[in-house]
Length: 101
Image (cartoon, rainbow, N blue to C red):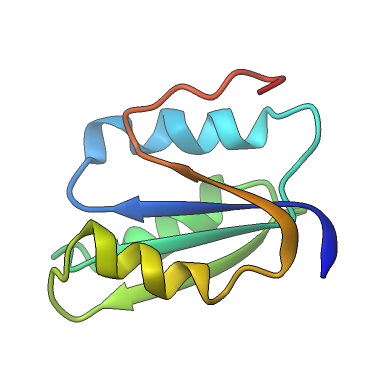
C-alpha cells in the first residue's frame, strides 16, 4: 500500500465545473498519487483527453468508462477496488478543494 492518497472522482455531465475541480486537485500542497476518474456514461468521447491535458503530469490517472450510467453507488464501488494508497477521498465536480484539506 502506498503512502499518500488517491482521489475518486465520479463524473456525470458536470462539465461546467470540471475544469476548476481538476485545477483544485492540481493545486494541492501535497499531490495525490492517483486520480481514479469514473465516467458514468457521458456522451462526450473527448473527456479523457481533456482530463489528461488538464491534470498535473505527476498525478497518475486511472480512467474508468462505464458504457451506461450505473449510478454513484456502483461507480464508487468499482473505483474503490482500484485504491492502492493508504488514504483516499471522494470529490464531485462542483466541490472546491482547498490547498490544505
